[in-house]
Length: 306
Image (cartoon, rainbow, N blue to C red; front, side, top):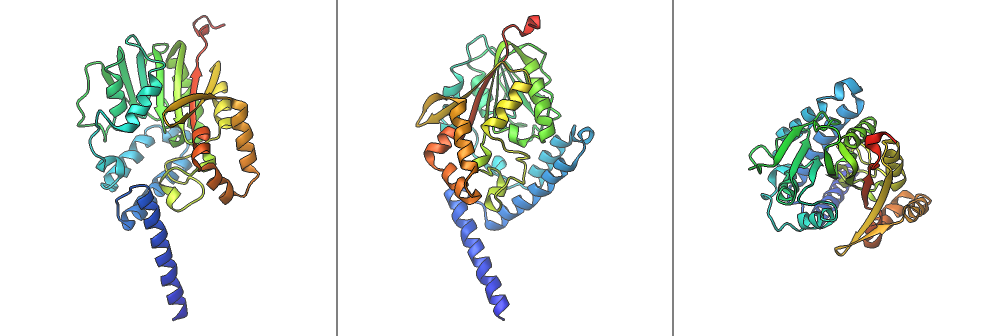
């Protein structure tokens, strides 16, 4: 009797905690749907994590298509159609406007609903959108200068040396860690000499940032690995990028953030207990600093191999 009462209290507490967290994120799904999403995504993510390299080619497409098929209530499927005045798109456009011109060939990796890529198409010469699934964009009307390439999770399908600006937003963390370096190498090859890769990815220290954030302290869903600034800098340098810059964004203002400052902050946070460091890192000022907004530049001498 007492055990059953305790179990009910624990379930009530868990339901209250989950409902409160969902409200804070404007997640309108039922608690059952959130739990279902967690279970399905963990199952599929484990399939990716455990698969050997040879099987992962094509598996990205399979698991994402299966996710959307099994979860018709997934937020990416139930979101309102992309609007021209979406605040998140406006912010990304404002950031990208520093780098694009009407002559730019732009490539977006992991474009999701392609709302940003289609809007960028009006500002550049050509847009390549590279994704592992076309489920979300299948019914979207595509501009004439827009090409959708389906990827195996690493390749881009874009000719080498032809892209001026590449961009990804919340993509890198979705790759198997062994595939992240390979994809970076593919992006580096796709870029023209002097081209830039603008990469936004969440910082592990205030994560996790996938569905498992409702339940876990470490990403276990489709965020196969979340990174720190030190991790990212090393990966990009090894992929051949000559310069790696980090930016902070707060209240619409963009400021270059020194790498030494980021790694100092990260080092200090790692000295704290995990539950403390996560809360500190998730405060407004540190979110602005630690959110990994990276601009990596390919050497202008890459064509000559110098």
